[in-house]
Amino acid sequence: MADTDLIIFDCDGVLVDSEPLAAKAYERVYEKHGMPGVGTDVIAQCIGMKQADIIAKIRDLTGHHFPDHAQDDIWAETKALFTEALVPTEGLVPFLERLALKRCVASSSSLERIHHSLAVTGLAGFFGEAIFSSSMVKRGKPAPDIFLYAADRMGADPARCVVIEDSPFGVEGAVAAGMAAIGYTGGGHSHAGHGQQLVAKGARTTCASWAEVEACLGTLGMAA
Image 1 (cartoon, helix red, strand yellow):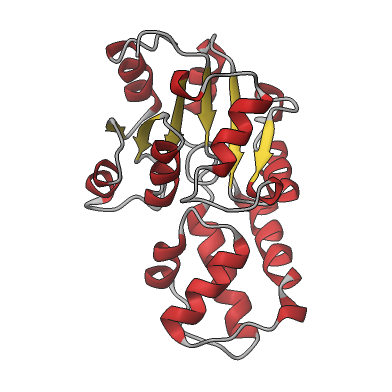
Image 2: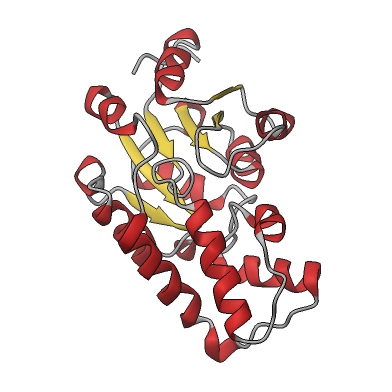
């Protein structure tokens, strides 16, 4: 892949170190509604999914049926935690300042959550309106829909796009879209075996820092 038209960034766990905070929000809200036991081990199996799919997965894993009327509570708790403590992943800002390639965000989160995350971390200016949510397409990750939609909106050939993802579902979706995927393991939720999981889903390589991502782009012929 000698030339790249577009770099597509996932948001949660890639641009912002949000996954530990999001897991805490789910745990608190489920406990509030009398459903304990939704800890990090459960949420770890849901990373990369949109909220409706996370709720369904938690139900499958725990038997907890979260009430439809209370789903707004999840975002309310998450938003409060993000406002208080969300930060960019380490080393991201200098990387984005040097990045000359066209870029966009393609996330499983709602547009409101993406915009809030980028605003409170000071990252919004790096992406402008080039922000795409799984709410805009029929199927969430691991389906390729959001990546193909983002490439189309950005006027890019999917075969000339690079996706930076931290979740197996995200990597799977990027590969299904015909894009090159780099697995990012620099977030606070990363764990032993994380990189191997991403490679197993088709990531070209994995990087634990943005300096590694920058070097990787050069090695793969995708100069930043």
